Image 1 (cartoon, rainbow, N blue to C red):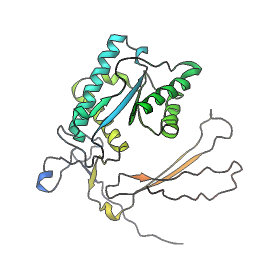
Image 2 (tube, rainbow, N blue to C red):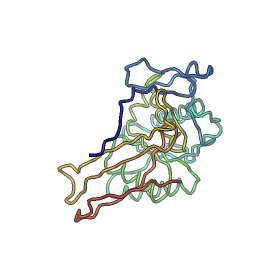
Image 3 (cartoon, helix red, strand yellow):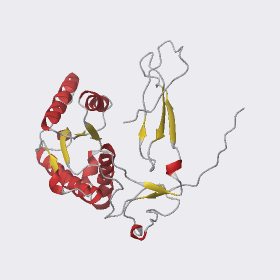
Image 4 (tube, helix red, strand yellow):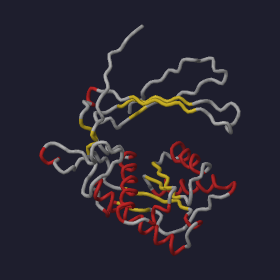
Length: 264
């Protein structure tokens, strides 16, 4: 039997660009050892930023939980906090961050017509020149979310983010800062940026692999397949993972799945 030499690596230290002693040519941990949460200090930016401007549209159904006045207030607060995060974390000018569909007009995503409504809103966003579409739902919806992602990714080729916990917008100070920083991180990744690096591992000579298998639940449609996935890192920070997808035949005779990394 073939044997491959291996060893257990120590837990890495997450490193952001502007840690306290980064200017001295090194960087320290942002959290005490042994803690599993991340926390980016005020004033820190991410490592690599690929975009200097952000044009985005919002699709929202927040009128289901708030009246027009409250929706308008929350939307304005969200936009101001987004500009603040993009300015501080991604070094972008606030003037370069533009929402292309201002106002508080809600979308009707209820009933059988929600797909047509999503399609129309995404079509409007694409024609307006949006690079990002943000879907804000009053609660997580297992029918709307996958259709939104499918349309945005495959039909319109738009970057997309779903915000499905609007109660977070009611929070103040540190809680909402962490929430908005998380959104800024997602935007940075979607534009090809790098959020963080690690200390303690030579990633230039290390391949990071991730694998998972998801099986259909009891309530799944008959014939719904299991999904196996495997990704490998493509950069020296261990933050970029590219891959391709294959569909196994229904008769399941093809036991071997061939895959190749799609470089772009």
